[in-house]
Length: 413
Image 1 (cartoon, rainbow, N blue to C red):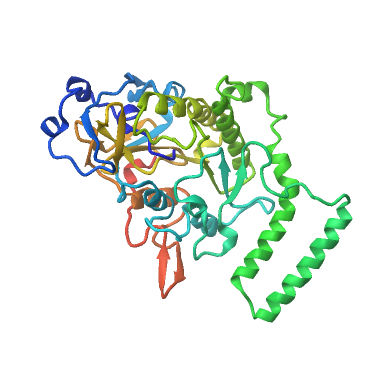
Image 2: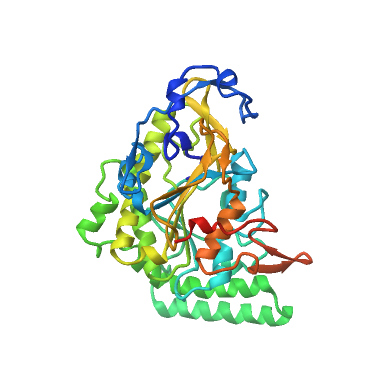
């Protein structure tokens, strides 16, 4: 959820904001941390109403009406924190456990740790709806891991991948080219004495050839029933809902085919605005939620109906949260001190909320968690010990969680 969803407008109900709406936050809330743009306005209530949902009684806002019907599937964390207040560094931190460019993405670590049961598709796929996170493609890189574990970017709409359809008129022509390229590459590999980069390039080239058969079939949704397509929102009037619906449905198809790690980027709603509501909160969050709400709820419903949710971990996260006071008059600034993410399926306890922010939704005060804890828990749920999943680089064994992180066992079913 690139740009950062506001926790106090979605998953973290704080009625005190309405009571003190319009007041000076320095007097009402107290000491304020430095914000990204230092345009501090008044205390700002949520424009959306909150209600309790499901047998669990989780408080969710009507920003996500479809997701609210799946409340009993959600394992909601209300006490997440980040070490970075700026999008690029925070995105690197969320993806790789370090706020700098160049470390392996969590998807690369999972592909490295688990391998792939499908020889015709990458183990780590990024389905792009149009909005690559701040930080660019390095959010999905393999860093110092072999290049075969990097995220493979597929476009959800239009041509999914360059050269996915052969340019040669006859299969025999392409086969001859492939054999020649393979002979030259292997000769270069022999003469080099062995090169990880070249070995990975060879493996990726061979995978690419197999993907020319697998990808068109994967992305062909004509075999999906009308009811399934409607469930995800492929017939929705809002075009960005249709885009994200297609991503979520393709993701389910990838799960069925054994792809280990799938990341979905959000559609290009209102240009590059993403969830970054420094102004126009109602339109910004309203448009983005309209794009993703029904498709995500449809994905959870479909996975559960097919018996796949228990073995599939779904994670909803932005890079940080937003302030409970306004930026200017109608926006919210960055807030790394407390925000919400949720998990579903994959062995987590459903229908629960963990941790809490203060009465303003500003700072995590009960069971605060770091991104390292989220990563450790995700890896544990996937059957990996985060302290043992290491790779020797630069003279030491490095892991996704660095020297930090603990599995949050209260989240486990």
